[in-house]
Structure formats: C-alpha cells, structure tokens
Amino acid sequence: MARRLGSLSTTERAIYDRTVRGTHHRAVELEVYRLRDGKAVLSLTNRFLGGQVQGDEDRTPVTFMECELLDDDFALDWSHGEHRKLEVQVIDSRYIPDLDDWVEEVVFRGPLWDFERTGPVVSLTAEGPEKLAQGSIRRADWWPAKTRTTVALKTLLRRAGAQPRHLRIPNLKRTLPRSVTVGVKLGKPPKDDKKKDARPKRQRLLVDREDTYWDVAANLAQSLDRDFYADNRGRFVLAHRRTRPTIRLDESSITTPVATKRGDDGEQVNVWIVNGPNPKGPRGRPHARVELPKKHPASARSRRWFDAEREVIETIENQHVRTDKQARRLGERQRDRARREVVTYQVSALPLVAYIRPGSLMSLPTEGGRATGRVGKWTLPFGPGNDPLILGAAKRRKWR
Image 1 (cartoon, rainbow, N blue to C red):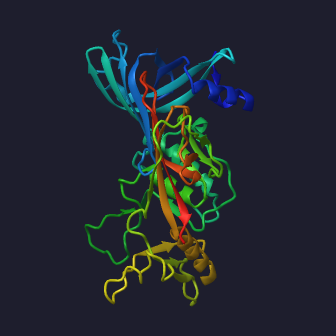
Image 2: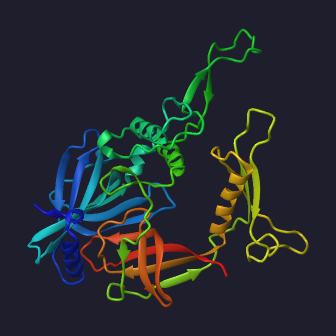
Image 3: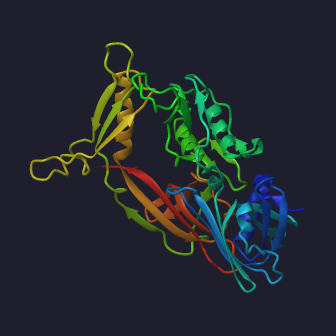
C-alpha cells in the first residue's frame, strides 16, 4: 500500500523532493465514486493521455480538472448522462527508490460536469467540490445574535448535502453581531391590506432564489479572518491563513525566467467610507471617511481632471464597529493595504508539487532577490508529457 505524502517525516520529504527533480516512475490513477453515497464505482491507472488541474481564486469553483483517457474497454460508458451522478478523484503516485515505496497524493476530487467520447478516447471535465454546495437555497434558517458563526456555517453546508465527514470547521468563539435569516420565510400580510382577494399568507424573500448555500457560507466565513475553501479530498475547510511559504522554488526547478509585472489591480479605490450599525437611541451611527495621501499616485488629487478630483469610493458596512474611532481604524487598514503596489509573478517550473491549497504562499528567486507571494492561479499537469507547472502569484509592496 502506498504512503501518503502528508505522512512523510522531514527527512523523508527531503528525499521525496530530491527524487522528483530527476527521472523517476510516476503513476496517475482515476477513481470514480457515486455522489449519493460515496461508494467506489471503478478505477483506471495509467490511462491518461493528457490532463491538468487549473485553479483560479477569482472564480467559483476555484479548481477544475480536464483530461483525456484511453478507454478501449469502454468502462466509462455514460452515453445517457449518468456522469452527472458521479464524482472523480485523481491520485498522483511517485516511486521513491530510497524509501522503497510509492508515495501518493490526491490531486483533485470533484463532481463530473462534462463527458465526451471519440472512439476509445474519453474526455472528462470536473468541477471543484464547491460545485456540490452551489444549490439554490430551499428553506429558511434563522440564527439569533450571539450565535457562533461556525454553527451557521456548518448548518448551511449540511443543508446543501455535506456530511459530517466533509466538514473540517472548528468551533470558534466568534459570534454573529445580529440575527441572521437565510432563505424564504412565510410572513403575515400587511394590516392595511383588506382586499377580499388578499392572500392569508405571503412570501417575503430574504435572499434571491439564485443565491446558493456556498455564497452565503463564504460571506459568513469572511468575518472570521480565515481561509475557507474545499480541499483536494472534497472536504470544506476553515483554516488559518498561511504566513509561511509552502512552495519553494529555486533556479534548478524553474524552466523559464520569472515574469514580473508591476501596477495596480484595476480601478483603485482612493476613498473609504465606513459605517457601523444603526443605534437604537438618538445618537448617530459610527462613521468615518479615510482617503489616500494627496501625494499618492492613485489619490483623488493626483488623478484630478483639471480642477475636479476623481474619487473612487468604497462604502463598508460593518456591524462590529461601535465607535467612530473603530470605524476610522478599519478605514485606515483598508487605506494602508491600498497604498502598497501590486506586483504579480508568473513562473513555469517542474511539477514538483502534487497539490496546491488555495491561499498558499510561494517563494521564488527574482532579479531583486527572493520574493514571496500568494498563489492566485495555477496549472498542475498530470499527463505523460513534459508539461510544466505554471504558477501565478501576487504580493503588495510598500509605495515609496
């Protein structure tokens, strides 16, 4: 039985990294499971003609997989749309002679989305596990204020169909600042509506029918200041943000020079307006307005057209803010982040990494020394060819 990559010790991991940089034996396995109960249907090994896992943190689902397989036995016979009831898992295994064993890692797991056959060649496309939680909200749920945010988070994912084994969400002490209602709720008709044809009950839509469980859960997770994602084994994880690089590249593993680009990421905001909750008494709601320094190249003054300053305003509604001082601090944090220049890196390297977790940090050599950035886009090949691993990362440097 092969060993898992995560179970290796520090010394064994160094041996693994050294081996995969050179010539070694590699096996890629495709496993198919039923969505309704998770039972295995079939398994194919070393049938891949080509394939890759692509990730983009700006889209949902974050990852998707596309591949071509040789299926001359016609084991994948889903001509009537049966593939929509299945999910796939891709396992990348490497033989390490110094360990005298195979070391495997799950590269991808998610529901099948598209299937096409041309003779013995089968093309598959699968979406990330987030796709399973993107069903429209079907019922109403209500949580009072002071309820733990993670309780609401777990309930939403269970409503979507996730089982307890799919949830890697700790019980944090952070609570909801106010009561939250999600879904369609039945309410009484207005008192002034005395028409004969008035309905005894009416529906009050608290969310659109197009809203999904994943969208609402992701919004709740943002307030916890942690990474919320679906991992390579189909589990929903709430974890600390990475502060140390997990992907380290050097000159020997890079196949092309590092491409560096400096510049802002679109229309940059230069004014932040922070509003707190509406108080019950006569006192006004907490409020603050923060702007970029006038000498900053993205400030409203620097981008003025003749005498008219160009303001790009972002309004922040935060129910945790209680005073004007707290509102100003929140606005200043947004301003300080925007003052940093965005630098993006793109690099092609040897496929040394079997799995890339959303939110991972990458360290790579550049002309100005080593740089660290958060991986936002990646392409991980697992076919028989020599396709490189493509990584795109971004960081913010302090504006001078």
